[in-house]
Length: 332
Ligand SMILES: Cc1cc2nc3c(=O)[nH]c(=O)nc-3n(C[C@H](O)[C@H](O)[C@H](O)COP(=O)(O)OP(=O)(O)OC[C@H]3O[C@@H](n4cnc5c(N)ncnc54)[C@H](O)[C@@H]3O)c2cc1C
Image 1: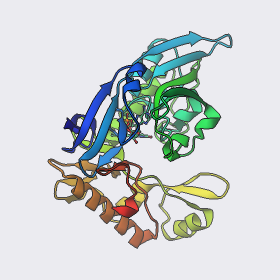
Image 2 (image 1 turned 30 degrees about the vertical axis):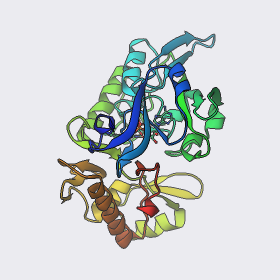
Image 3 (image 1 turned 180 degrees about the horizontal axis):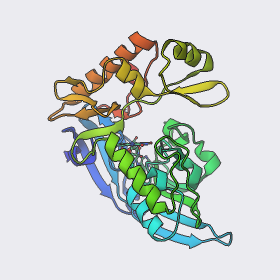
């Protein structure tokens, strides 16, 4: 058995039948796709049971930086690097663009999968290519930015269930000039003279709102912010005037799942060994020796409370696995 406790930030005591830590692409030739699950840092996963297959923990940590003729930098980052460590080292080398994503836990290779985003920047905006290893055909392929089909917490890789692809490298095109993106609430109105100042502010804001997974088990935002029609958003806004709504696209608005959860009475609650974080209701936390079924039960309770109050179905953002593989919440 392979212990998954060090590889899930919820700190659930789960195991897989087998497992291996991968440090270079050549090692992947020995593994077959059947019942394999790829993990980075485990900061976006929930295991509802022990996993019956093989877990591949990705720690491919290569890095190369090339200055282009247009003055930009091509950064080829091994997918097992820790994203926040990469951002810190790039700032030190005078390479900018990723500062708003500071302190998001996890590996570089997992970031394109749900197109991680924070403070007005999504990682897909800065990606040029993604290199993958097909665990069935044992070949490497390059996906252009367009082929990645980035969307809100979404990409081709998240939707693709047919082909077992392990992201081995992410290629970024980054700038040597600092153009701060400071439109998002918390950053707006502040003049950032250096990328380090922007990074420090993002880290400060995140530390106020989010629990540190090293101290309190959690997987970040448990639910996605719901995207609803403009008509529904306007009807709700008339009823709840302090409800935050954000423009999403021409026909839809984004609501704040954390606000909905709070107004449904679920902020800071505790059910057994699990609860919601006092400073951000969107985060489900392990308050001690939580069992997977307790996390599932609390998430379902929150979904039911929000639905009863607002008629909105929350969707989990966290990738959820049972003994056989990824599982849809309708089946839990
Ligand atoms: C405190 C906290 C705050 C967070 N804040 C944010 C935030 O602000 N914005 C945001 O977008 N997310 C946030 N997250 C979620 C999480 O950090 C991201 O989803 C991150 O990209 C997960 O990286 P990981 O290496 O831990 O991936 P894992 O949890 O290990 O894996 C996540 C998924 O990606 C797959 N996967 C992982 N690596 C690879 C690979 N190399 N190739 C193919 N598939 C792979 C896994 O199979 C799994 O389905 C937060 C999480 C925490 C705990």
